[in-house]
Length: 424
Image 1 (cartoon, helix red, strand yellow):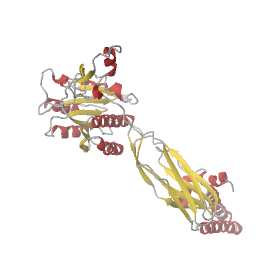
Image 2 (cartoon, rainbow, N blue to C red; image 1 turned 30 degrees about the vertical axis):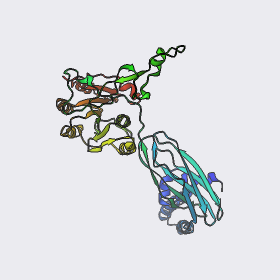
Image 3 (cartoon, rainbow, N blue to C red; image 1 turned 90 degrees about the horizontal axis):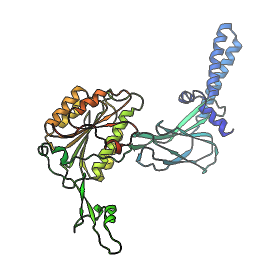
């Protein structure tokens, strides 16, 4: 029997249902014919037809018994990475070793639809001690937590009427991290120049990020801050004289950032994969990893509860992305997340709210947040059913506002501020 014919036994029309009941297409056709034959035999009262029907049933039963042989195999799957990124190519290798002779076996590695299609490997004949190896790849299309496997061996009886299944390798779990992009989100003293005060209880963050100007290099400056293009314009190669210029930044107002991810499923776009929700998760992941790299303490809130609290340093990047890989839309309102921030005794945290919608209730809570002296930015995720009033409500609050459209580069998005950042 060819590999193509053998594969057809298990993957024909209705193959998944037939696999669950343990029948091939031929076996299902024979059973269907037996039911029809039994009905006709009852109708015409033919003993011969009854005998034929009974013979078919006995044949299928015998095929089931003959097919229930013990499959002597050993299997191995190459070690999978525990964590991968969206779009990352993952190489996998499976190996099957026969303890004794086997034939007419199909190996099937089950994969989630967002990882790829199931991998099937026909094994016509394998002698004792012989091995068959198959390598394949998959590319995760979306962040999440998935199972790779199980690896299942399927074989048939000599008549090709029934099937048997055996799990030879248990499934392995992988975590697909959301993709991140370069973003620009900085809080500086310029937001508080009118009036010229910082928010209550805030403290200056000595290493600023917003560009203020350039000055001459002095002993003790970090050489990485030298602006080489500007320095080159001042150098005279013949005389060897010139000025080394370093970048000077404004002083920030805080080293703590709180990110609120709106997980209310009612507000996000519909479908098996919500475009607005995935865009919101990507924005939060990009902001969080950027702030971690810059030395900020990062807290992430969802509508249901706090995901991570005051993480600092690159060593916590994986933990943060693990949580964002698992997050899913839920039945909870954005107001509950904002309430937790309002009741937090700390007021020196810069808040970024990523949401597809700002209603009157959320707008009132954001105003309370601003009135108590907090710095805030609202990132509106714009979907197909976007309500223009949401941007209007956020803009009238007096906080910075950006609009995120799924697919737009986040670096450009966060450089286009729509709302005013000054306090009223």
